Image (cartoon, rainbow, N blue to C red; front, side, top):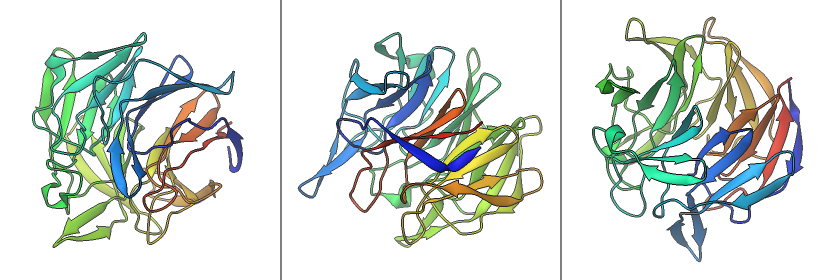
Length: 297
């Protein structure tokens, strides 16, 4: 693993954040998202695919409507996008991208509308945590809900994450458990970063506090790598470039590398022995235009 050496790859044509992302057939997909122009926030329906072998982004079928702030997860040959929305209330819909086409999956509709949730896949089951029930600025509507979806069983309510209600956390499936790290709470209109690391055990449906981050932060991305969760960037009182490696068994957290610049809400995806960083924020009301690659070998 060498997460100190990053290579610049071809940039996206339209830089944005809040995208739904995944890996399909060794290629990276970035769907929807938001960007700022002349002080105004816009949502888009653009969908782009990055081919690492060709070092090229190409457009593909757009989303059914402008969309952002929705988590995505890949299962089989399909990328599923959960909830999200635009400048208004969120959706409860789940849409799926497969073989170049989008479709609505009514059988997978969320129990309630959500945006800015996080999702992980473990043993053919989707786990969807938290999110905002209102508009993208309505932090008072942050929810503690924790749901699972398995084909044939539908959505099931699970025990909520202990402690304060939070969002903008990092998540990954490691060692048969769901690991959740960092994030923030919002009380009285004040956002407070968090440093907790929790593990959820599906067999017993229980949560456990397994460690603490060195610095409270939000907006990082988690990526499972063997028996560890890699925690990329995030926001403290600045956009962070440090990469942490979390051992959810011992609770130990070690520095694992540095990003080329401070990034939050940037998606980090693995294909083969490489990890790619794309989309996200590199400043207030700024969007990261680059695509970066490092080796996990």
